[in-house]
Length: 119
Image (cartoon, rainbow, N blue to C red):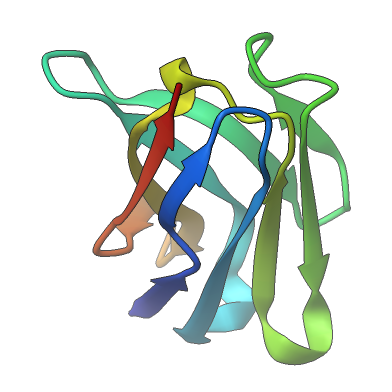
């Protein structure tokens, strides 16, 4: 099992910045990738960014150049630095860990943290 604990959401004005953190515990060695998804009211959950165990990152087009995903292997934590925030970034943000356990791909989720960007 993998447990994910998120922190760092909040209310910010447009143009501001926030940093989200996601700390993983449990079977860390089985995690292939970690990242963030978000879900706005009435919309489907969408990928924001992820980082693989090899360090490769991938970003949604809507956040490229504004968001940066980084990881601290010593702390088993990934950070999502969000700059130049826009009202359309308002959503619940969920940390995700993709793991390979017993030959099966398993996806783990955090509890979610709210990001609200005011105009």
